[in-house]
Length: 133
Ligand code: FES
Image (cartoon, rainbow, N blue to C red):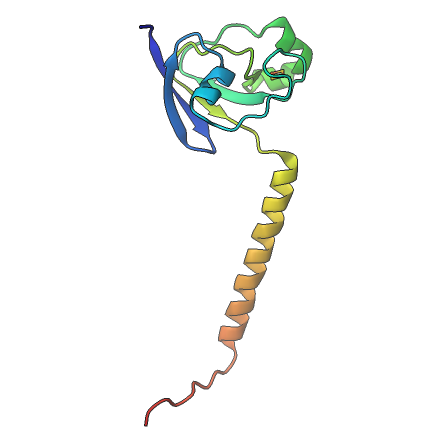
């Protein structure tokens, strides 16, 4: 049995232990963590971008990663999940799908608006019905 490393996926808050040297995508599959990977991990689509914070130095980005990620993104920890091998304990941030983010923000705004309406209603004079006999 190989050496295991602990990986935490955010925002799912999933924590799993995988073999050192496995890719982030393999770890996500093992942990059943949703991570977009349209080309199935062949390094052609670039959809598996993640941001990783590792407690041990990661291997240098592969040629495939250099093709899909700018220097500025690499500097702040972005990698391709299908290429990036886990070298030690790490936290992996999975960026939110842009469409999903828009929907979430709209729902949050609606929720906030509803809360404000309730507060406004509560600010109005309110006569409770007398339910005593
Ligand atoms: S899954 Fe397509 S580049 Fe990683």
